[in-house]
Image 1 (tube, one colour):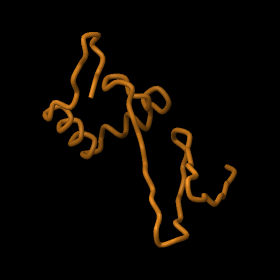
Image 2 (cartoon, rainbow, N blue to C red; image 1 turned 180 degrees about the horizontal axis):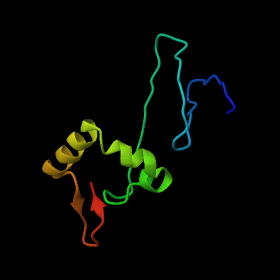
Image 3 (cartoon, rainbow, N blue to C red; image 1 turned 135 degrees about the vertical axis):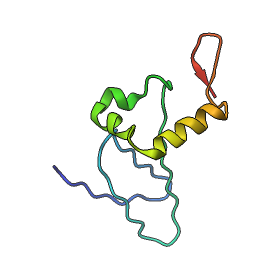
Image 4 (cartoon, rainbow, N blue to C red; image 1 turned 90 degrees about the vertical axis):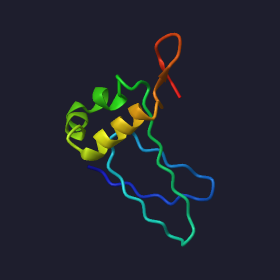
Length: 87
């Protein structure tokens, strides 16, 4: 697989396609990194469509179940009048 290297400047954003392996090395002592992940629907997770093996293995993780139970019990998952999840 090819290896890419780049240096980001202030204000730059690095976007990784789904399931791409990556590593980040901060060159200065002060930096900010933000990871964002999102789902379109609780029952239809995008990962299942793009990488079913990873999504199936993910269900073996206790962290997955802790998140799922907390998500359900705290009532974060609320549905609108069309039956879609709203936050």
